[in-house]
Length: 192
Image (cartoon, rainbow, N blue to C red; front, side):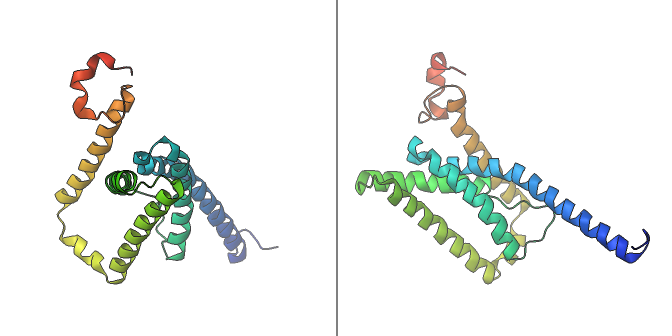
């Protein structure tokens, strides 16, 4: 048996500590990212109606698992980043779903099949990710350094404010489709 100060004993301890650290890091990342991903999945599909909540939960779980696997396969080794959907991207997907799918699919095309709507959402996200991958391969990320920090901060703050404004009627017990603009005329109906 190796003495405690020999390299062999130190290597075994180091490997055990690394495995323990990776395991704790994975558990911490799962505890933090899974609820966030589920919430974002629900938010992204909310414009389609309450019958799509279960699909949103499932999409969020898939995003949590697939994001981690894909980032590991693509070489993501940053110790401080948890790969999961972002709030602003979720809001953009939700806005696209609300404007394009619910308006066009329900009103004009008459599409009511949940599987068809989910296929259209998947196609939209797949095409967006294909474009993002293409931009990455073409090294378009180098142009990000030319974006001023206030522009990026304003983009994030605007997305946060829009998400907050969409949730105010729900928190106050009012119909979600009323919007924050209709709040002043309905103070008597507020039920927090």
